[in-house]
Length: 224
Image: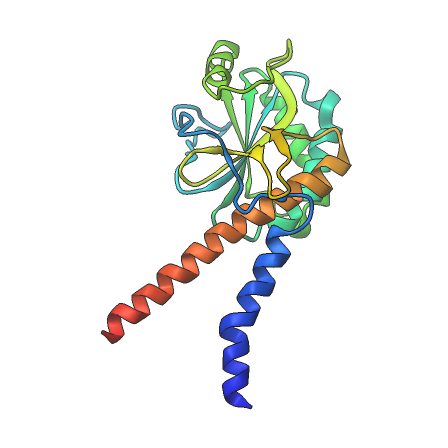
């Protein structure tokens, strides 16, 4: 019985986990790359003068625009559908790029989000500030179909992997159908709950599987 339990843990559970994370709306075996190696944002600072990086983190990247409080519902949707479900993953962060001069709106938004965050933990919500020109130039380097609005923002948010590649849906899926999705519309709770939630699961599973493989390889080398 013990032998069968071990076999189940080694072979069946990983398959079940893969089917759970890779099934659903996203029918790609792996979340495709939309743009490789987007620029880092380490030159921009938070309201308290800290710098952040996209390197070695799974990042939800957004551009708030200057009319933040008017669009606060978008952030509430993102908080409930994506942030609360994934904030405990160690290398996961939300980085929102805001125009300089909107610091007071960001502070107000954070206070409104706190009661909605599990345990009022807002540590993974990070806002950095840049000039409108810097934001426009940076967004252009993402090589996306969409664009920023006149307030230098967009309702879409983007998944960026640890290698700074922007990920989404591109090319033929497992059903042979063409798909393209570069961002996720925060106005739509359904888009976040279904498509984005599913795609985040897939990319998190990629890293969990890679970490497990590396750990297993290390154990094998030590035995040898």
